[in-house]
Image (cartoon, rainbow, N blue to C red; front, side, top):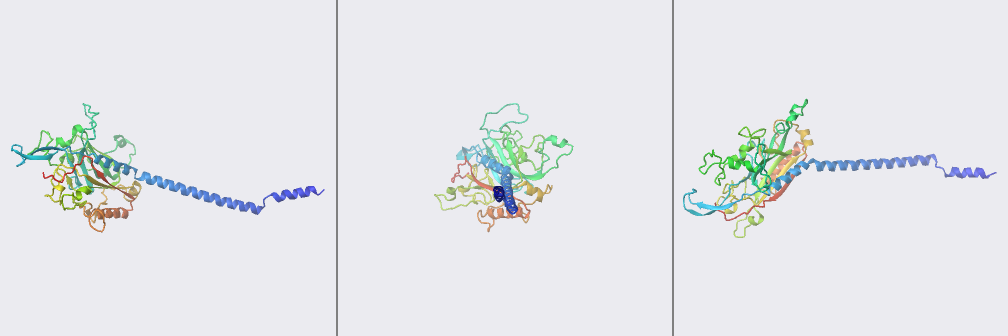
Length: 399
């Protein structure tokens, strides 16, 4: 008679009470809340990391392209007779290093490329055996000759993307508004149309209407200035040939190029003079047609760039991300002044390359970063030193 009530009591003893259920639900809710927070934190970290990687991917790829091409620069030099008066009819007095190819880098204003506002900081132009061939109206096929010489170059331009867009975009009912941006421009000339050979001057520095080219005494710069035109131009000077340029990356606000001696050449064993990073090109200008660069010692053969490639070139590139640029500066047709110090263009003199406390490269780079921060821009600085494979620097050259 008493078995049934005891069994029911035992069943009731095994069940959860209301308080226990409530406590369990609270604990479960807390655990779920923590799990959701951890998931959100992980997701945000993943999205942030992915965004940082993607943010400057184009700039990073452009930087790698610039340094890779630059390392392949060549002058293809040879030895030729030296004449006492510089002519070709006298008895030769010796041999000198010669080349019809060129290497030039420096401030855009020094290179004759126009305003430092629309083309800020530096530019570089050189020849390299890259084997680029093919024009729109080409009738002869040169493909397969991978070591043909090309003219290559880089600079920054500010302007709209109106001239670089595909034509069909202009015919859309609601075309996308033009975007004004800083862009890293890559200059490329096919082997069969090098302006170095079609825009030269003859030995008497007069016009060369025949366009024969190949003149080792040629020192003019129209071989790249004519073809480059001006920012926003769609065609070069002849009005018919498209500019041999294309956009390599957007939102590149600075490109700084510093040709340098190797550490061995900075402290030559045969002399007492010790050189620095700024010795070879104190104003950043390096021109392979000159026997000295501005401010360098013209009588010092250890600093003679005539028909020589610099052994090293320090390349610094500064990029900003599109999101912060669009938010802070929009698409103004007026060029933002990011690369100057109170109106004075930066990176005009090398100076001190290590300490921002002194005037020079390091101080200018710090000023540029301060300018970008004051505009609320997110930026990234890329820098490396490129070794030019074909450079064979001579400390004994006198021509």
